[in-house]
Image 1: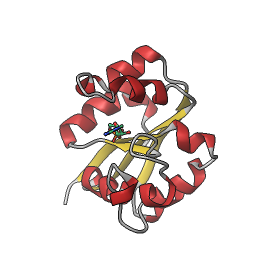
Image 2: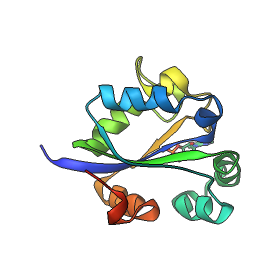
Image 3: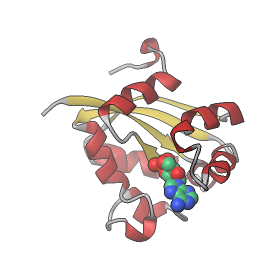
Length: 140
Ligand code: CMP
């Protein structure tokens, strides 16, 4: 198995409810290491650019508004098969479909306010990590 890195975002619905520590505990309990972390307020420009792949979707405007509605915590996670592993730990995008014990089942409010983001492929992970962190910010 390969040691991988993935980009995680703890979203505004979760920071608003003071859930950063509980979500980090889930991440660590599942064998992923948080090797970089920063709490930031996204600008509209950053949120639009980060989710540019969804620009044509009907929910894009609301998604951008939601992502700038409060602070987020951006993180780099490292572990064996970290991309797929974190997607397992997060659970399905829609919390109604998420498995028991996953972050979204336990904490998400809706398909939009779904508490966390995780990269969906190794290639996207590399680009998303670079979007928020320089090599010097990451201490593995
Ligand atoms: P995320 O994993 O960050 O990737 C894109 C985000 O868009 C997703 O989580 C949700 O927050 C949001 N999203 C996806 N589908 C919908 C939808 N049908 N309606 C509203 N928001 C959505």
